[in-house]
Image (tube, rainbow, N blue to C red):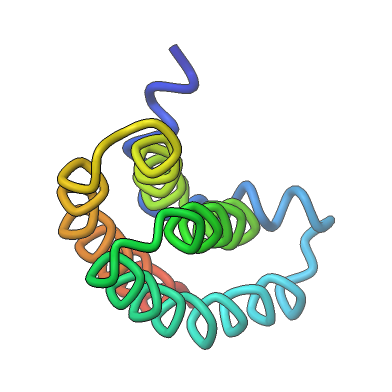
Length: 117
């Protein structure tokens, strides 16, 4: 049940603070890295999808999943996990279907990070 609930949490700021012993500076640094790296990786994913490059799609979605996990962006992580699985096992139409959800999930994660004090 906790896993299902976690998938709906856009950003778990308290989890990060707890994980890093209350080090707010470190958490802010993780957020900055996410803000810098995730949008270009999503753009690269768009290009890989347009070109039908399965291995690159798998690599990029896996990277997005890891970035999201490091930032406590659980909903985006769940979406990236689903996209990675679709790229590993599905047809190109399934990979493509995951992109709009990923894009929206990233926008939500970015907004939540920017709203965090």
